[in-house]
Amino acid sequence: MSEVRIAAEPRTEFGKGAARRTRRAGKVPAVLYGHGTDPQHISLPGHELMLALKTPNVLLTIDGLGGGSELALPKDVQRDPIKGFLEHVDLLLVKRGEKVTVDLAVNVVGDVVAGGVVQQEVVQVSVETEATHIPESVELSIEGVEVGTQLLAKDLKLPSGTTLVIDEEALILQIADASASAGATETEAEAEAAEAAEAAAPAEGEAEESAE
Figure 1 (cartoon, rainbow, N blue to C red):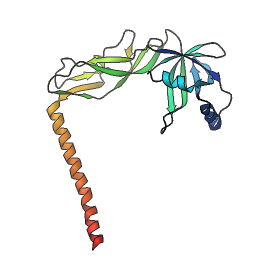
Figure 2: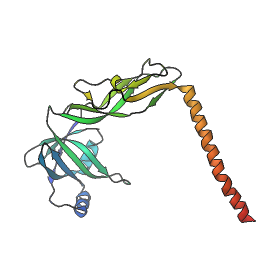
Figure 3: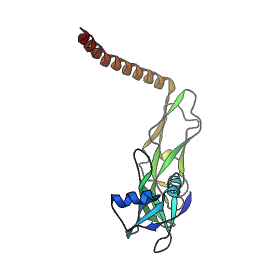
Figure 4: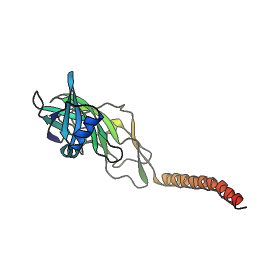
């Protein structure tokens, strides 16, 4: 897994105005919590943090704290809904050897059989794993899987030391009949076109009445 060292500064001002001033200075307000300790209000360099958060479940070594460096995982990242910049980050304190629950992407590997199409229901799963050895993803092989087969969470290839948190019977994906799927898509498109035509018909009638 990726590990990034980043320098923190203590925050003594709070509220929306203080947060805006922090962001104008190129920093991001953050809260560091966990292990039964009081939350620590800090600010982190915005550009470095943005680059670090491009890696899912990145492990951060936070420097500049009163008690020395700490390890933390991002737990809640708030972004501006329009511009996308970081507004606030919650960080969870972790220790080496400690187990944590995280979401991992499902990486589908292999080629789908001829005449089949992949219908994926779940793109990430919750797992428990060691805090400083979080894998990037879990694999699910579809190599040689026949049409009509459903693959469940228990079929995932989990890295050593990682266990499922979700139900092992949860559906991850199925291999459907490509021709049947294409037919269903065409039927849906035809239905949508018919609905659009029906919706347009009254509008045209109203326009004609207005013209009279």
